Length: 414
Image 1 (tube, one colour):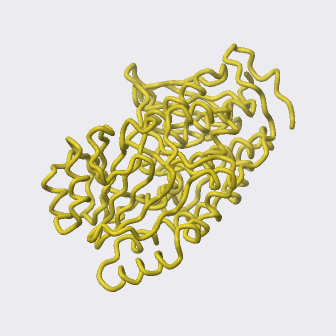
Image 2 (cartoon, one colour):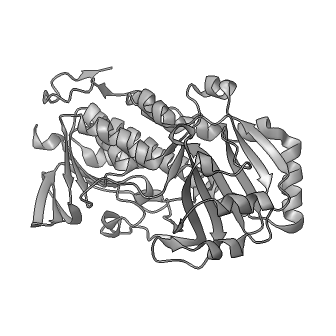
Image 3 (cartoon, helix red, strand yellow):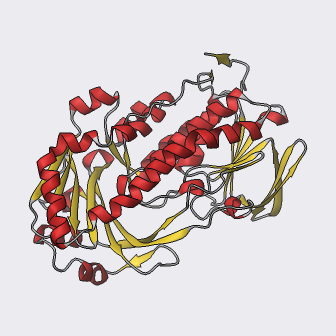
């Protein structure tokens, strides 16, 4: 393939793999640079709202994702102190009909496997595992990327570089005026348990959300309902990295909560702590033929479950922008940034504000709960139509996956 059709993608997580697949389907060759020797995904579960589900469907992955995921019937909100139900937001057949795809929950490793399998089946995706991007140099015909490997430094040439290397993005740190990630002052405690080990309060057919002073707890089924993903969020001093977490440390923070919540928190064998970090989306995302996407550009609070969804949206839109201007990646990336920044910023701000809503205590919490009960689940769900109703752009170029080494000869404009 011609050099001006080669795009390097740094990072083979959810955003990077989605970008690699979308770019290959749009007629580009992809050099997928992953620092790890094997593909892996941090965390445990991810919620696939309809806006992300549409991207996966356009990439031909809907059936594969459906086989490995669960489809909760509702989101049930309860008080962490009393255990009383506050509201139920329905995710049933009417929801799926409205948005065209259901609300799904899946283990991150399973989603990564689906994306990796599809990307690796593309003849024009070349995975270079164990390649950690250390620097890049922009020149007249594209750029050269230096990568650290076990065998020493290796260079990769490409027409452009897409950085999907997470909140700690090295590429972002090398860009002028790149945003610094900053701690939110909250920690996510994560675990996975089998359905058999789940206490009765963890309903098998819904997402559970427990709200309380200074924290909240979320749980939902994954792997077709055979397991549960469990997340507890608390205020905490910033931690340097993910680390094991003792049961006693967690229970101190929830000792005054309802006994159902305590039973849920006691179910996992072990927990891991993840400091929540954020990246301001107002900083530049693009510099010439280099662009950031997903957490590298705008890592956000997880309280609307949209971090992964925004990365998948980014990846698909980026591929279409580049397909419109295949010989001008700098212009395509600038157009991508203009297109995506308003939506991402709105979601970023909404997610950040939700933290205060979830963690209220005392009279403000009582008013919140009363307002949610009065509104009802249907009205509360309608507040998120602007998120769930997002529609991906029509593909500029499209071809069936080949996996046969036939390159881009069969592309067509649609």
